Figure: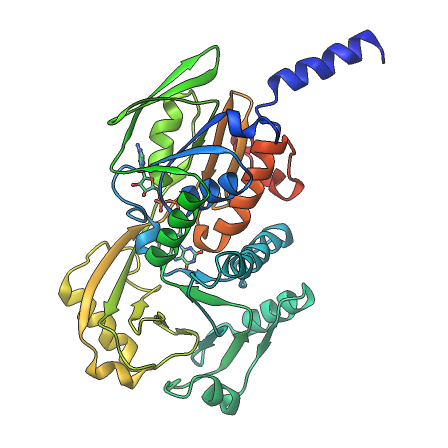
Amino acid sequence: MHRRHFLEVLAALAATPCLRAEDAPKKQIVVAGGGIMGASIAYHLARRGARVTLLEKLRPGSGATGNSFAWLNATFSKQPRSYFDLNLLGIAGWHRLQRELNGALQIQWGGCLEWYPPGSDTDQLRAEVRNHHEWGYDTRLVGESEFRRLLPGVISGPMEAASFSAQEGALDPIHAVNVLVRAGKESGVRVLYPCEVTGLEVSAGHIRAVETTQGRFPADVFVLACGLDSAFLGRMAGLEIPLRSTPGVLAHTAPMPRLLERVALAPGAHMKQTPDGRVVTGIEFGDALSSDKSIERGHKMLREADRFLPGLQSASLERVTLGWRVLPKDEFPIVGFDDRCPNLYLAAMHSGVTLAPIIGRFAATEILDGASVALLQPYRLSRFS
Ligand SMILES: Cc1cc2nc3c(=O)[nH]c(=O)nc-3n(C[C@H](O)[C@H](O)[C@H](O)COP(=O)(O)OP(=O)(O)OC[C@H]3O[C@@H](n4cnc5c(N)ncnc54)[C@H](O)[C@@H]3O)c2cc1C
């Protein structure tokens, strides 16, 4: 090997922030953020034998995760192809986790029906269904009789077109994050909450330690998975992380007899029923940008939904939640290491519930093996520079 090439390789290795698999148990990986992303990354790292500490400001699932609709999908908005593939791997990842965790995760796998009233742009829906079908997604247009078979308790109202995507599902995000945190603990993750990261000790461009309300934690690798707060913490390490947010309000009923076997996206009301019988509904149109989470708003949302699901007329409203989406500026994930702070691994994204299993697994590959996962290449922070 030429001397110059050899030195370049050496320099590259020195800059590589990864831990070799055999070193993993000796190194300290500190994960900040106990949402679905931090919980999944910590779990996947610990399964590979890494020494992991997970620090959460409040309690697991208290950020966007706990207020998420948590629909697992690679649906029509998931474009271009590489982003669709990532989401599809997310869905597959939840199946894997269900097996790995011996059934501890409860997921409603029934697919999703989406329908449109007369006058909608159904040409676009047809084109999207055709496109996703060609990408290998199990999706198709359905007529009225199949609609009634798939959603027996639902009245569609005037309907121009409907699609059924069979691979989709939904889960209770707080239950899921708690299962992942517990599984992480069983694999050796030290979980601390409430424990807020308040500062980063940085020297020569590397994070040396993490300062928190429970003391100082030396870190060989720091995983930043604090949702919207990642922008603030990233700045402490010299990184500008372009995040914005929009609010999402959901109404949750008390447990009810089974009304829905799958996710139902009606014109004006998105609905799902969790395994414990609670129906969750949100409105994605009209006043979607309002952050009003009053009981009155919750009742209004239930009335909107019971036009389609009459079984909801006897529902009692249990709570109304307001969540803030973690939205990178271009709405695609930001994940991976960045040369400007080579031992900080960032994971900030929308659709994070769908993506958590695959991001957790790929993050462990990149952190522990030094591999650069090709599917994550479009999603580096450096694309904004
Ligand atoms: C209304 C709504 C509907 C959604 N619907 C869907 C959907 O149907 N399907 C889907 O896939 N995705 C959906 N999403 C998106 C998804 O919920 C998020 O992408 C995902 O939850 C983000 O997870 P996270 O772990 O990155 O962030 P978060 O869940 O926000 O977790 C970050 C955690 O970091 C903690 N933290 C913050 N600062 C610190 C600190 N200084 N020290 C320690 N801890 C700290 C917070 O307390 C929080 O628990 C939805 C989101 C919303 C709001």
